[in-house]
Image 1 (cartoon, helix red, strand yellow):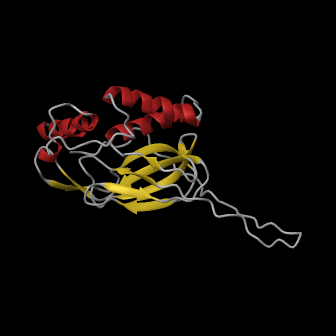
Image 2 (tube, helix red, strand yellow):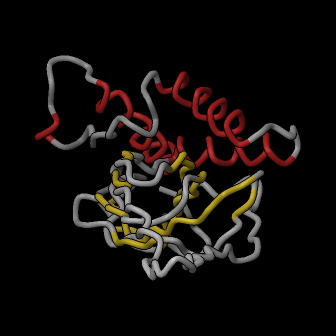
Length: 212
């Protein structure tokens, strides 16, 4: 299954700097407290991405404005956990490299250079966040970039409205619901739960690309 590439390129910006100044005077030599980390975790799926590198960057007004804030590698189930110690900001999470098993054929496929999946989140220092990285979160990130750069939406509207569009398409929260592999017997269910409903999308794209 081919990874969907960006319609609009992600624009790289200058490295963001976090400057910590020590207080002085009054004989108090204490330093400012360390910013608390807030775990960001989820699953990277285009079928399950194994050994994929997940990197986080600060995102503002449609472009990345920092270097790598945090980095992790997905496990055999596609799960990742990032532990950024960062200010409150919108973060772009980018999945590159690794491999997935083509659902339509069972073939193991490595990601090629330039193939990427992304998601955008609102990070709040010290708070745990779940955000899966899928084709739909990638499309939402593309639309958010378009809204910010060309429609001049603020960050909140650009990200929020774009996620709403694709969540409505899937019928589930595209960042919070974990997509399940509908070809895995362990996920069999007599009812269509949210995870299976979400999992239809990568499976359908897999079948389509196989036919093409």
